[in-house]
Length: 107
Length: 120
Image (cartoon, rainbow over all chains, first blue to last red):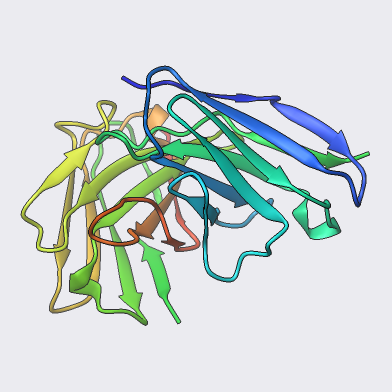
């Protein structure tokens, strides 16, 4: 089975900071990688699919990159509403495995 | 607007059974595959099951294979998850999620979830 590892597990940042979250797959998954945002008590929300495609309605400060085994979610200028937990997820095979999550907290 | 509304979550004893439902609206239900995804309290996300648009194919996580059954009724715009032989580790918030397009798969839209608690 494919394992998805995110780093860091948590980070503290300030409004306006550039934030980067990394996701590594245990084998090549081409560009079959998605990113979700989850706020406390809420359902997850799709941000990025197919590694770099921005879901409709998602602010352009969110971007994704990578292919193969290494992927990145970048928030270009962190906003107050971006403090949340972020998950990567692979769609390469029929297991749809998630990373363990990265919690972005206010510094 | 896409809406997914889950129901059926309750407290159930270990070994018991439960059927979750998800009512869909705001899109052509029978055009899309549908998923169940769960989240144990304070934990991360775990994919549970997928059913294709026509119900012709189903997939399950190893942790639920042989105990859970996913189904759909396209005439009622509804998705279901039959859960048997429930264990304490099945305790979670269960989300239904709509897939994105036929040529790619991810969880484009989510319901608000229904809580299943397995406890004696």
